[in-house]
Image 1 (cartoon, one colour):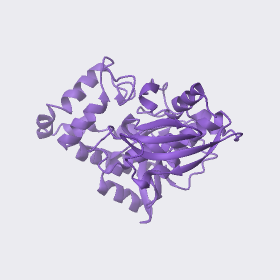
Image 2 (image 1 turned 90 degrees about the horizontal axis):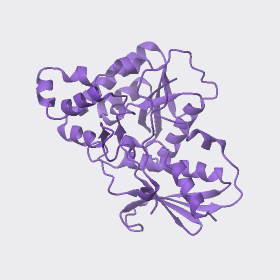
Image 3 (image 1 turned 90 degrees about the vertical axis):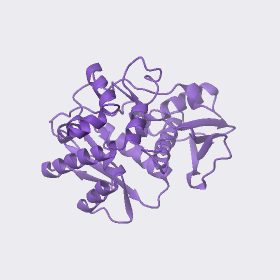
Length: 325
């Protein structure tokens, strides 16, 4: 049903979906009239993602992007979520994520157009008024008033600093930061200097500050200033707190997460996830309580959104040879 060039084009477009730490763990293979998606077991972030749920979310976003990319070609499909089967045997080196049984003559979903437009933005946001007409996310609590945004910004800084005080986490984070363009993986994955909006001078400070100099800087009380980004967070006119049913598959959560990101893109917004607010148990519980997110819901991600004040950074995406099994 799909030619090799069509399949490759679909995978390339689907891999534009957001991925935690830009690790891009999703892999694709075409088996007859179905596409199988697996999570590469070599992409392991034990400090940032000890349960593997972030990998499931990233792969779920890639799955939904695949459905959208297929629709561009007039192809539909029936999706089977395989994440909770915990199947590590059907595809060597991978955990099975999902299967798509392909069908012809599907209706094109124009949302696929947003895949190429979406980008993350770590800089300051414009102070122009937001136009949120058409926002339709019942799974997203929106924080827009200034006092609450300040509170979230300060909480994010405190949670980030607490997590960064763990040496193993800093080491893992540095392994995914691409702080020089000469890094062999700079154009392919991880958190590039461009995406982080760092010049070479700041990048050198981060490498030293998160590395060998951290104990000294921490003893001198300098680490909080080095890691703070509350000023940037406060420029965001919208902080979106994305929550889903607690018992939902990580893949289904990831599918909804992609839709959230693309809906924001359609409104002219770019965002940056503040992962510390959901990685830190205390911060996550505080936000859930403040926003009356009930115990049957899980706070998945907190993102600052707004109109960016600059151009999109260059994309770092894995080549097809690393994506197709």
